[in-house]
Image (cartoon, rainbow, N blue to C red):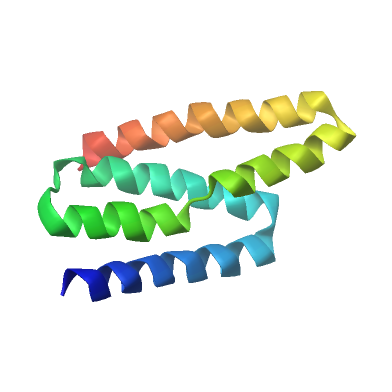
Length: 105
């Protein structure tokens, strides 16, 4: 039963990421990654199969490092400052959202 649930969670995460990113662009990528950081923070106390399925498959498919790299590539062509600000905002806010998830979880 673990494999079908893993596949379902990954498919749902990827579908949500595709839908949000295609509608919201750069903002969507950032919001999804912050939601993922928060969600992983919430899951820190959850172990076993459900934690693996939700964290690795669901949130792993929802978030995107390649999306951040793509956005940084686009921004860097326009302004290195904007690219640096986007990366800094992603990293700092991601840690903050993960911390909130741990505290609330």
